[in-house]
Image (cartoon, rainbow, N blue to C red):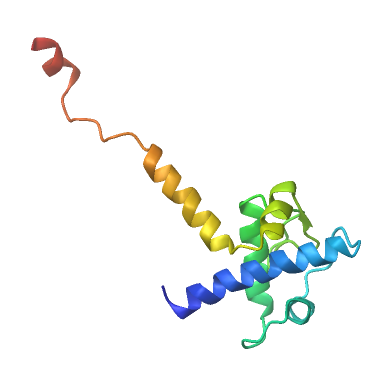
Length: 125
């Protein structure tokens, strides 16, 4: 994978860890802030950008790890961890491994491709 993809997953993980920390401190739906997230999780790479945090919040929302009200250009400004999000954050594993494992399970469940015979051809045999 590319460095940009690796960073994207790292930002998602950072936002999730930050939300768990804030929830533990008693802030049920903290205001999404790139600088605060970076400081809380000890982000050492180049500073988090607003757009990266917005994208991460939208990903977490779509995957049902957070709940909140999506706002165009802002993402989920006051996200709240869901039960699933709290479970994943407490596990301490990367979201990337969880999503990859989920997609692998889905691929295993997909049915085999149907043969290309028509109903009339099958009936004639």
